Image (tube, rainbow, N blue to C red; front, top):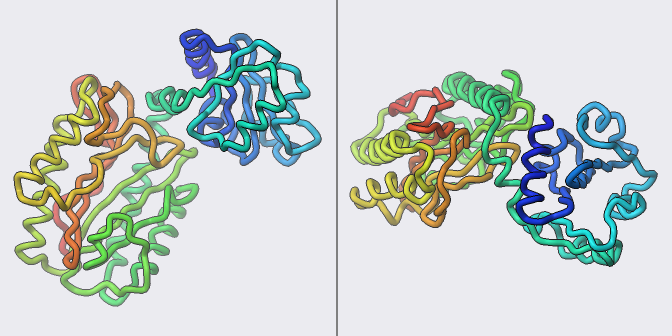
Length: 357
């Protein structure tokens, strides 16, 4: 973690007239402190920064947290330990992750710090993390590269008679052998009619000749998630399969050519959605065009009909239109791109032409 992130957060403290910000949620905590463990807490004031964890993570925190004062209390109850430091004083205004903190934890903060005002700053940390530094882009590019290579190797494993679950296991092994820390999320392998379910869970269904197979997967590198989808045909595609695939591909290519800084997530979504609607499949595209990537698999910003915010330079988003037809199957094609001033840079290089295996 570099000092620049603390500087940016302190500017937000001034902007919102806060004395401090309490960060507890894992991905936000890693972003602001560098800590990748499971029990930690950071309190950032306008002048100081404190990090608390328990004894189990003492050595890890000493290695990862370099810009904050480290406190390792005897107990694992970090809220109680924070109260003992007396950093938060009566009369202070402290922001917290309202979208992440449980009601129970919020109530406890009120009891431990009766003189402190806690102000809901939902999405503050997520918004800060949405604009990526160059080092983050390199890590995400590495994750995307591992994902691309894994897909190319997986093509040799896609054969009639193998189950969706077996293909999932093979893909996970390939990604890890190529350098992935772990799967970015639970891989989706949806064959045949299962392709109509955007988030199908791989099961015992066997792959069959003539079916579409949609694979949604990603490698993780340095905590950053890649998220790629490819749809292939096992054998020769028929006329309808070619039609649906081409519509989805053209919608994705049109969106990729349109995405740049300054447009809204809603506008980006509309470019792909309008084409699919014009082709008569609007009701079969029920999710947003894409989402941000980072320490979370679904992060800011969003490409969706409801997202009115403008995209910014160096945000990273997925672009993933799809068509899903119950009883028939589906097609989704997804890339990861970096938003630039006048266009976007695609981090995904796996082929998108219809592969007939």
